[in-house]
Length: 520
Image (cartoon, rainbow, N blue to C red; front, side, top):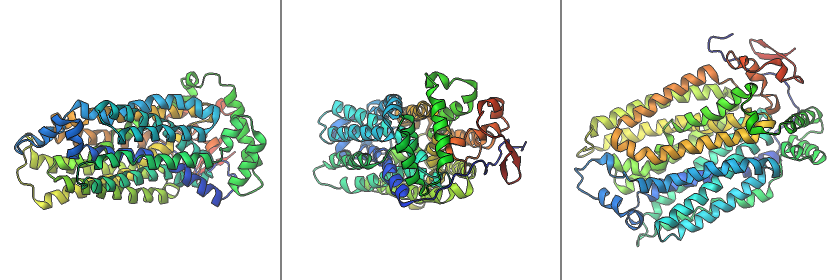
């Protein structure tokens, strides 16, 4: 038993197949579901830093922002109504993800994506035409319903379609789309903010129709996954689809395993209640703790409120939006590192390296902000070198998240759940993610006002805790077929006490060796 308690698993079954053009195109189209989530994250912080938007909907925040510069800069955006505009979406996404579980299981993954796109489109139109604050909140709720459906279905779809050897890279296409959506939103905010007449925010909010159309039209063109077809009793179609996806005729072994998993899942009458069984303790723990930790990295503080945050620490309005564009660009490029390395270096390496890098950067940013702003939030004149240092370390922090907890926070949960609990467990994963995204979005500006630069130390503490958690409790899942994934828990120093050989009567036992595992 290794000291860290985590076996490196490279073996198990090896299904024949290759990365076909059909699978590549299909996964790229499906991954575009991340655009709606990313666009919203990027657009929210941008419009809330536009004076014309604040003056129309949040005049008290506008007056506080333009008060005497000697006032506390930490508190200039502290408004519960303003944070409700941002956070209401994530509460709606939490609720809709629970409904999406049933839709995904009974009708297939692609229909959840379609519903998500249509709901998001309706919310975007309402926000773009908003005349009062209730328009905005209602539009945000519809956007949230759309994101709940999309985030439930897309990671599952990608994990089920991808050949296991390339599952990591293809699944991270979802996170890559999120980062592209954030970058596009930041760029649009920068230019729309310059429109004379102060109506650029309408284009920013209404522009969400475009990514909604992409996922809506894309979902209509996508095939169902073999897993979903088998789950709904279409075995012949599923086998034909599996042959096309894998690019080979010999898919019998994988098909039989998929059918066996489906038959086992049909014996489960109450997947939600089944999640509480002892043998699913590792899966339930990951479905809760991974999204919990992902939100407490502090990344959404940067991405939601990047323009607001940069404005608060002394950047002018245009400069703060441009700084958000820079961090958005870093986010996209660093996610490509994860696409390249996740199936080469493994999930654990990226988790651990990213955690250490984020921890160091948050300590440095807290020190920089604390040194200039103190506890009173009155920095005086800020030199250019200071601004460059803050943006530099925030970019290094963003890059660490973008190749670790960003993509892996969606990838790892989507690939570890057995079929019989997959939809329910993914709903818990999305719900926990959205709940803590809601909480962070709702309380961040108040926390910034009261905790000041200590807010970054708060998140640094959680990054330290989650890195320790990864080291001891998350096994390596690289190169394991998705229907064989339960075996990694049987080999783990801690989780093996909850998972016994009797839980896998059709599987062979695995014996540890230096290179990984072998069938015996």
